[in-house]
Amino acid sequence: MVASGESQHAQQNWRYCGGQIKLWREEAGVSRQDLTIETNYDYEYVKSMENGRRRPTLRLLQAADQMCGARGKLLAAHDFLKPEPFPARSQEYMVIEAEAIAVHDYALGLIPGLLQTEGYARALIGESCPPLDDETVEERVRARLSRQEALKRRAKTVYGFVVYEASLRTEVGGQGVMRQQLLHLSKVGETRNVSLQVLPFGKCGGLALNGSFVLLETTEHEHFAYVEGPETSVLHADADKVSDLTQVHGMIRMQALGVEESAEFIRKVAEEL
Image (cartoon, rainbow, N blue to C red; front, side, top):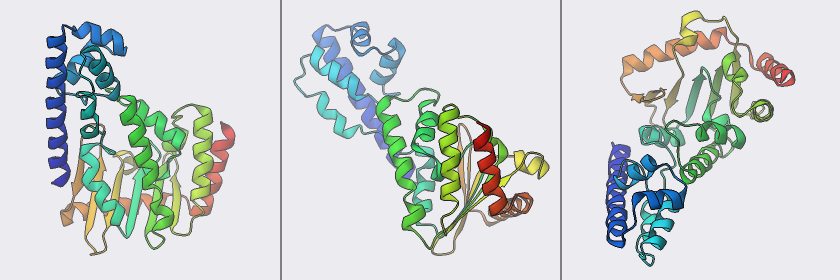
């Protein structure tokens, strides 16, 4: 896969840059603890960046360059270490989503990325575990908001969203952020090529609780199903698997409230906050 190759290349850059930081630091007589104090990072965090397990941040490069007298040689690596806009495991999905003619998203516990406000996205991405550095958080928030431009730009693409009630009541970022998020849902739901439905608690039994997934159709009428979990994601192209999830989506959608009822439901939840 292209995304896998890109991710591997990025990690090679991490290892090379981390190794250079360590070499410059040791030659200059700067301890890792000194670098930890200067950057205000945890010792193990700095160690993981030097060993290439994490992406060396701009803050680390700036501090190491100055403390080690590298005269810009370490800082120059930053152009090759820009954070990826999406996690490697979801990059192939993002490529297909950007060109799809139909996107049907069922969300169990969180608001779908295409519908998130900046505040909601920032709170969600910022709470990642293990923690992301500030630069990566900013890049991923920017990329998520950029994805949403497709809702208006790709007017002929059909976007269907079914959100389980838990998605509306999970207060990501606090009440204020969540209230703005719900009001945003009401506004987006008025878009001509977007349908937004709510699946209330107690509807559709176990099917509703099996997890979130997205169904996609491309311009060549290929069909895919994307299932994302906390640690792994799978893009299914197998016709049988896609058919199974399509049937599940159909059952869920039949049990969901209609578009107008859903809009009223969302407004009531917002008023309760």
